[in-house]
Amino acid sequence: MSLSLVSPLLRRVLQFKMCRRKMQSWNNMSCTLWRHRWMKRMPVFKAMSTHTDKENIDLSKFPAHRIRNFCIIAHIDHGKSTLADRLLEMTGAIAKTEKNKQVLDKLQVERERGITVKAQTASLFYSHQGQQYLLNLIDTPGHVDFSYEVSRSISACQGVLLIVDANQGIQAQTVANFYLAFEAQLAIIPVINKIDLKNADPERVESQIEKVFDIPREECIRISAKLGTNVENILQAVVNRIPPPVASIDDPFKALVFDSNFDHYRGVVANIAVFGGQVKKGDRIVSAYLGKTYEVNELGLLRPDEHPTQKLFAGQVGYIIAGMKDVKEAQIGDTLYLQEQPVEALPGFKPAKAMVFAGMYPMDQSEYQGLRKRH
Ligand SMILES: Nc1nc2c(ncn2[C@@H]2O[C@H](COP(=O)(O)OP(=O)(O)OP(=O)(O)O)[C@@H](O)[C@H]2O)c(=O)[nH]1
Ligand SMILES: [Mg+2]
Image (cartoon, rainbow, N blue to C red; front, top):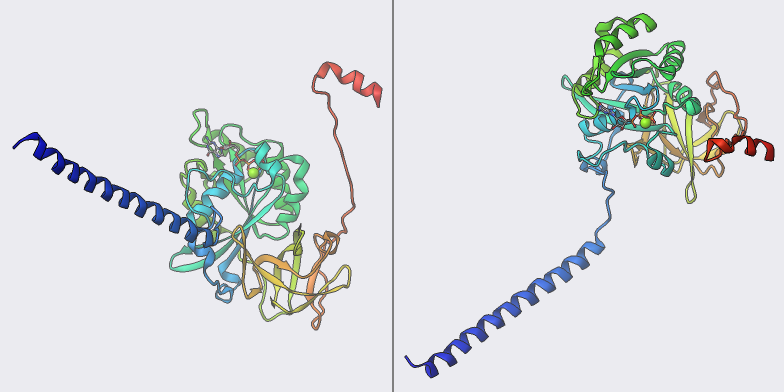
């Protein structure tokens, strides 16, 4: 075959191939455009959400004996928030990823400094021996400056996980926080964390716990919150060793406000522990301290994001939004009750005193005297 005959044929074949490629790339492009348009319309889910977040949760299935309320306490940096990450992952509250590092530390200052400043609540669903339990966890700060957060978290719980670093052993805030829980007569589960560290000495820490707190060493649970080692044992111990809240659904509604925060659009979001009865959207509730009446606009669980539910029942912990315009209206320790069923306020309430402390230090220690002179 001569070249003059081949070349037009080849040209045709090449033209056909190029045309097909163009059509393919046009197809791909239009597909991408359609996909982008479609994705734009999709609701944006937070990275932390899991499918369980979108389920309708019927809280009436969790009577008080299927509820455990506990907080995690320890000295600073002993691994409370890391353990909370593992507990959230294991119970499906958040998706398991490498990126989960102290997910309950949501404030900017907490992320920047790597310390917990504000206590955070998360409700977990846990299956144990064929029964579903509702576990309400509160992660607390370990720094001494925020010990008030610990004391008020304890008021909403029946038990604590007392974390001790297997390398550091018992430290100042371990003792202070232990006594807060001990005086409140809570069940205490000692947990020895960071057993994966090279210098970990869980034997020594168990002896310390036995000596200082008079807790038998057999009660200690050795874990690595970072690696998830033995964390399942903690969930079992929470169910077996922490008593359920003493609260009856037949009593009139009574709830303790143990935390609150302010949302510019919705007003005050109060964290409550229900000590009796039930509450639902539309109920008219009264603050025992101020005597003011509010209508419940929204309520639900913190998982750890807000998850609205129809009702909250005796023994449960959740959030409530009731048109309070100022955090002063949701005082920590205040009691909420139904307008038509007044009850006696829960004991131990002291109105908060506004205080501001500021610490000023020079960048360079040698300038300390100069700073003192100026003020
Ligand atoms: N090796 C090791 N490191 C851990 C473990 N648990 C926590 N850590 C590390 O210890 C540091 C402190 O952990 P956090 O969980 O923030 O401690 P915390 O007790 O919540 O700290 P505060 O809330 O600020 O008191 C982090 O760098 C963690 O990665 C563990 O089991 N093993
Ligand atoms: Mg923390």
